[in-house]
Image (tube, rainbow, N blue to C red; front, side, top):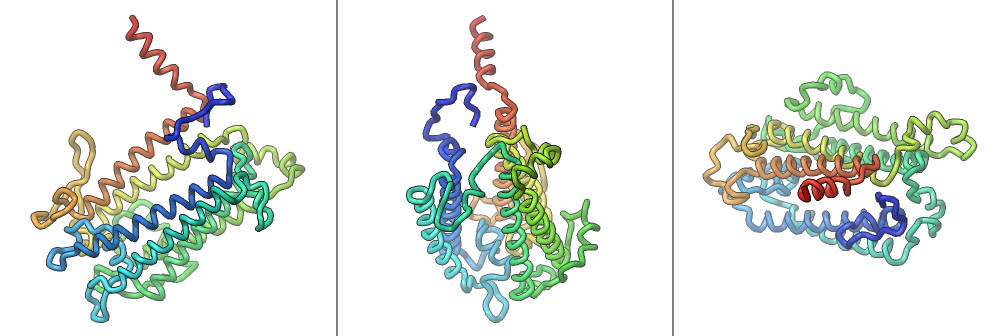
Length: 357
């Protein structure tokens, strides 16, 4: 956190990042706690949507965001292939149970485990101690994140292969498996990925992402495991990895930039693509319009939409995603400027001097 030259600066309670910036154990506790909150919100919201679900109204017109995602994954269908919500309550309850598990883990990391990860019962946990200005440390931690993301992509591909996902082209759940290693189709969708209409292409893209992330993870872990002697020998490579540029503010700003890009891409994808986001579950495609600010508008008959101010599930999902991405961009610019050393007090001083004139 930027201190403007004051090493003993204190922050208000609302600046939550300040208390975990240099304390890796507390940082993990916060991450796990956030996961528990998300897990609880998912389970509770899923039960709420299921309780008010009206089978006489299309799901896409009920702002049932959680049910829509589960239906897209092929969850909630009975043996006849009709979506009835079968098994959805079980999944929601599991999320509630695991939210308590995450909450307990967050308390353990926050109250009982080592706050700085200088030691612990597992051994070598000190390698995950946050050193914001150390490229090897940041690279080592990034590599493990990439490994987990790669495994998650493989899990999704295997889910589609074994269980199956909903295909709007045939209005049924079917198994999808493009295979591992054949990534030629991925490169053919570099500029038209928003119009993909094949589930095989979608899953092939996830398999390709798994390959990139696991390979990148192994590379970053390896290059982040250098000894002090090797770091001196690889000084130029350390510069390439960000030596002299890294800080807590800088890493946070880049993270927010990534969320901005992903949020905008996801918004455009969800607004226009009806293969990954079927009309049966999300409603009709949207149209980008401009008023006071850009927004996504419904294109179909929404007279039976009872929730989200009379809009479809797709409109609810896309507009919220779109504006969250916008605010992530503002956060990126704020923290990037702070990481570069910009003193925002100059702005208030300038305004004050103008008003004084």
